[in-house]
Length: 123
Image (tube, rainbow, N blue to C red; front, top):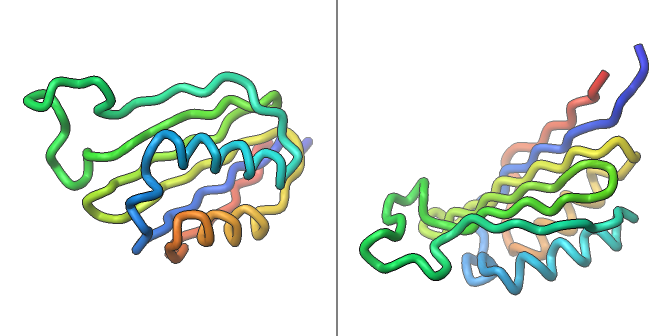
């Protein structure tokens, strides 16, 4: 079977939740894409930015910032949970990239430890 890319799934825990903001995450995407040689396209957000306080998320598994960074070869998706200090990251690309490079860079950026890492080959 022909290989049509791969997906990296990272669960990073015990992170510094001060890195879970739009500025930091935008910079993370920029530096990560430079590191793994991916061309960035549109970036979309889902969080409580500009949401009235009474409508904001309060549950630990819901409160955080999520974003999808489209890249020319697919996408990078991130979900941060600030009350738990966790980052959930998925990178899917038709272009080859080094998962270990992503893992090490992401742990350093978010100041956490990966507790789950999986690579899935897409056929």
